[in-house]
Amino acid sequence: KMVEEAKKLAGYAAVDNHVKDNQAVGIGSGSTIVHAVKRLAERVKEENLNVVCVPTSFQARQLILENCLPLSDLDRHPELDVAIDGADEVDSELNLIKGGGGCLTQEKIVASCAKSFIVIADYRKDSSALGEQWKKGIPVEVIPMAYVPVSRAIQSQFGGSADLRMAVSKAGPVVTDNGNFLLDWRFDQEHNWSAVNTTIKMMPGVVDTGLFINLAERVYFGMEDGTVKIRD
Ligand code: DER
Image (cartoon, rainbow, N blue to C red):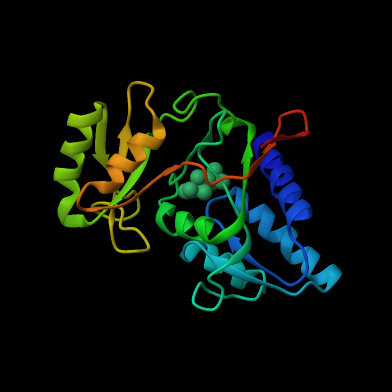
């Protein structure tokens, strides 16, 4: 399948270009990162690399354990050499929408602790402006008791619609790895994403947003034609 192959291309390129011996590596969440972790495990075995892996979710933790990679955390490695993660969309300035998988809060923490934050994505995420291809909105993690006032505050300040993310295989709302709710804010115009991020982050009850501004150092896009496109 073309998309899966594109994810694999991006994952392998990032691991091969950015992971070295004796490193602490942040491991993102989602489906693209699965390919990166498989490649990392392969290289650790082949090259006898000494790495430790810090997860960004329960899913990432399972991935690390399933691939027999050394598991660590930010208590022991508060400064990471590199973090590798996926994205829902990337614009021309390397602003990201993340959180499609609901893991944005720990992902942003890990990304911020890394000297180098590398993003891996298939060609469907390659946009010039946010919202071009990703139509599910910007995720915002909120303390459960605040989701209605936060939703109203976002809508009245920026328009669009901020809706509680409901679970599929569980009755009621999605509960994040941190025990919180998620709003998906479907915006209906272009914004100054840095300003929006700061304003939403300041709203009481907001834990974090899926806007990753000035964090990504480089993005590897796996393309339909089997090539890898790099955006710095
Ligand atoms: O939820 C997240 O932030 C994930 O990293 C997501 O943005 C990318 O998931 P994918 O690799 O499955 O597309």
